[in-house]
Length: 75
Image (cartoon, rainbow, N blue to C red):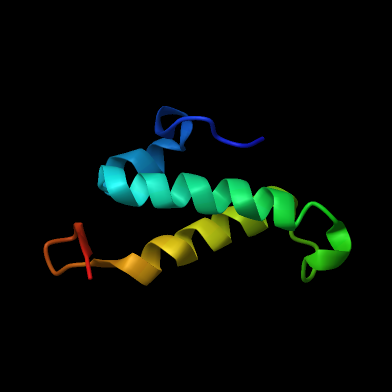
């Protein structure tokens, strides 16, 4: 199910990511849900949601990195 607001993101995402990164996560997740709805477009036996979460984290990591302080910082 797509997220309509960052407040709906998993707690693990909300706790660790700054707001801008949460926005990136939400948009990437929602786009990936649409892009990978056909099982043939996914590798292996991963669910649509599993793939969408991986895509979302990848999108966040393109713009943010986890610092030595354990927090996510914009690159």
